[in-house]
Image 1 (cartoon, rainbow, N blue to C red):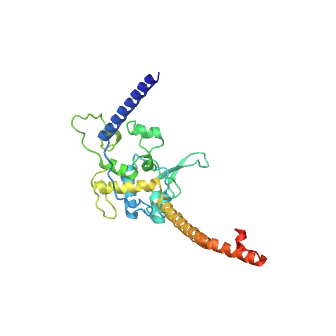
Image 2: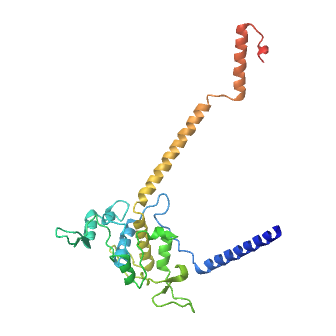
Image 3: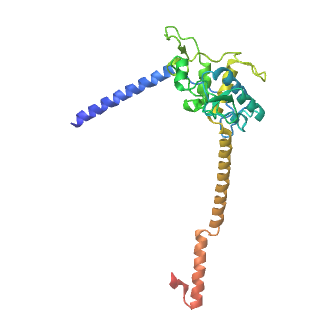
Amino acid sequence: MLERLDNLSFKIFLIIFILGISNVSYSAENKAEFIENNWSFKGVFGTFDRASLQRGYQVYQEVCSGCHSVQHLSYRNLSEKGGPEFSPEEAKAIAAQFEVTDGPNEDGEMFTRPGRLSDKFVSPFPNAKAAAAANGGAYPPDMSVLVKARKGGADYIYSLLMGYEEAPAGYELDDGVYYNKYMSGNKIKMAEPISDGIVEYIDGTETTKAQISKDVTTFLVWAGDPHLEERHRMGFKVFFFLFILLTLVYLSKQKVWSRFGSKNEEEEVFDKAERAVSKYEGEDPDTFR
């Protein structure tokens, strides 16, 4: 019986080992390493590049907003500290460019009005089904959480935008499907959105594919975490106060224990006390030992 169990355990272990090796090999062959960038917002002291954020918003608006929403952002966020930091007047002008459905009015009917700072970013489609129907059945994901939802974060988004290539010889793609070496399975239904010169930056920055991809990725990171800089500042303050607290605790400990001498000093004090008591009572101090 024990011999059968040992054989069964060995077979199970062998199968798991072979499957594990196969999966690792498959992943290594079909998944390229993401392109790494020295992002300004990484690390404890990371902050956003304001100019890059403003350019990234321009790319989103001119290239991405026709399909992708950023439903968790409001137009007022564009002027808040830690974001693109457009002036309040600029943010109001941006919001007013969009028609927002509101209501009902006094007649019980819905109506449209210019956008306000308090409004959420206007979605390109009324609902998810309409979005999927307009994109060949593929629902374009909301971009306000895209960076957090994908492993690799900013590096994944940047790599995906830079990863469109001609399919290798013999690699078959269905109609409306494109080859991207950073996409899982290397197949993606979104046509290549970024190319050199696809936008013209207001600040005159050169519009290379790499620059545009980097700027819109920076914007999407901020869209997913508008309070990132505030959290970084708070984290630094917490570490600073913890350091001060630990220092005070250590100094207090040193001061308290400094009142107690070494073991020899304690024994000397004890002997002196014994002799003093013995002398007072007129007895030999050695009788106390």
